[in-house]
Length: 576
Image 1 (spheres, one colour):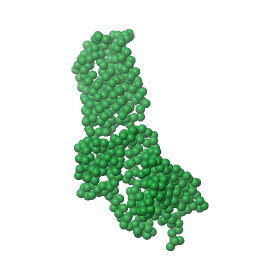
Image 2 (cartoon, one colour):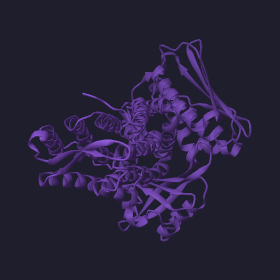
Image 3 (cartoon, helix red, strand yellow):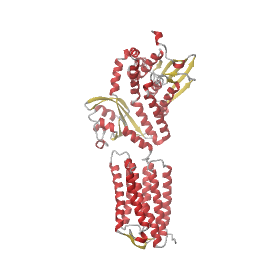
Image 4 (cartoon, helix red, strand yellow):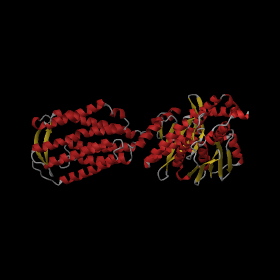
């Protein structure tokens, strides 16, 4: 077998080098969804370029036909991989996993390639083989028989189906990855147009340059998918979390035009996604004035709004947070609506019964514990969870490992916080401390260098105490004491063992409180007071003594708790 090398082979070598670089780049990001399909496509391109180069180089018609058959391996399998890439990208995961579809797509390439390898003697698909001289190379000439038509139609139908799926994704304003859909669409259009031109005998000096066009296509696709992270785990996870959230969530840009709304939000306002995406929030919420005013003020907002829902007026906790780029440039806004109708009713009942709460507990201890559990759970749910998810979502792109650790902290925090069946039991100080650590790490991630927390702890192996007695104090210091100050602030948490008692102190250098505000806190008036008063009442009920609060406006607040060694509850009967 003789070979003759043409200047065109320099192009082939160059294309192979580019393909190998692309393969290595994709392999380095092989854990991204879709990467395996991309690697398969690039490998097929390398095979196609090698086959074309050998067909041109070899002498003799039989040898040229032998190497030209290699082309068809790539020609028949490339659309299949592109289809699977498109199905995964467009969210059709169930169809992509279909065994029936897999067998249907495999049959055509297998049959066609088997026929091609025996075609030199049988001329079933091609006939009239001859050496075709072009101005730059010599290739194998042939004519297709009628039996080749179904295979050609199959490939073009498959390609057309992929183009339709991508075009619909690109035109769908509610689709998250329209930009990436554009890369995939034009990435397929380039080789498709070149193939059509070659099919109608419009070519580059008689040479099929489809492999060259596929190289540009692969570069475009790799850039669109891996550079923009279309298949990154964080985007898929965020997409699923956003759509599956029961609370209502919406995102809108700087121009106040809606970018996305989850299913709960659409149901709440009785809207259809395709009809509102891209429209101004002023227009969409023109009939819900409280919501419209909150969304259009272009600033952080947190408050309660009343919304008509199924002929009822329900109360929602509304939080509007800015969405910022890595350079702190405002990109838009995210609004969270959490239904607090039941909680508001519970709070009103709680305030009405506040004077009789302690005596009611002594008479019906179990019943009050259940109400207390529901109240604490309601306090934990609304803002902290969704603000934390917003932060973790933003960190996913730049620090995925940090985002993973924060998700574990959030998981531990929520699991522990929601396990309120054990409020009447005692836990170790170590367990309560782990909850505090998780909460602090999440808050430090949200506010970065603004919050410093120092721990000064003596040995406390035998200390047992009620759950959720210390964490609310640290949370109160961060939320109300220091987050409202512009400069960085510090919270100090200390535990000292003195004689047969433990002295626990939580101190911050935040905004502090006036005497009037401190009085409101101690009597449970206002949102801040309810949380601290809850801890105060539990301490008095269990230990017979509450906490001591010292605060100076503009200087900070210090809370002190005294717990007996071992943390045993005091004997109530001795005080009767």
